[in-house]
Image 1 (cartoon, one colour):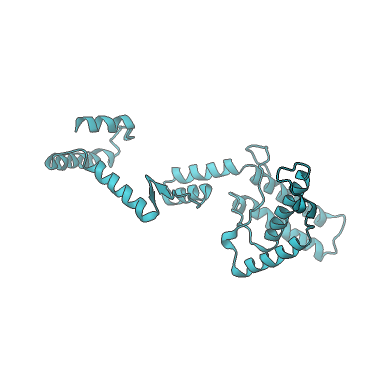
Image 2 (cartoon, helix red, strand yellow; image 1 turned 60 degrees about the vertical axis):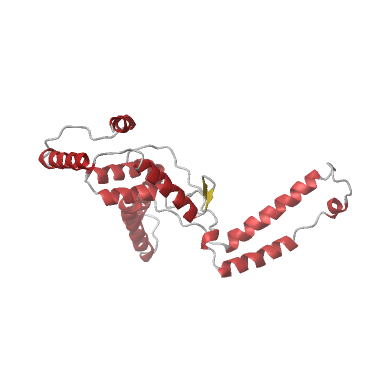
Length: 250
């Protein structure tokens, strides 16, 4: 078994607490657990009784008390609140799963035969276990390369929907939406701002309707007679400069 790509380890962060997935029961459990933890923290009474608002001698005690409060909240949340679901590793099912299944199979055979310390069954079990671990480490270390290869393959095979599904999987589904634009607050107000901007944009350049019909007819003819027949060698990428020139000629 041989693999390529980078040998640099890929760091994986622990799954974060997901308050969005927390149920009412989770919240109640969190509050109860937090109450127990907070009750176990000793209150720094000397700090509370200190009359000097600018006192610097109690700063360490305040920092310690603050840290214990934060630790209590983090600990209670970790025990009671669900975590974010782990994103599936690219290539795991294709590369690792076959070796994993083989390792599980031979481990079962080894157990059923009395777990011998020497012999062919023991050697096969050790070998399959080693291959499984090697494949798992390789996939973890080469996530970026595997993902890039999958995207390139789908794009080359004209699998447009699968390609964009892969892009979405890589980028994630979370989207940050602005809450205020041009002093407009809320979705409806922001939609009105964009509607007025686009209306102003589309009505800013005048054109002749007959000329546009003729231009569209010419473009359609070129597409059918050249592009669709693979006789077109033009670069159809539209640049910012092309748009500026088109608006300047209008």
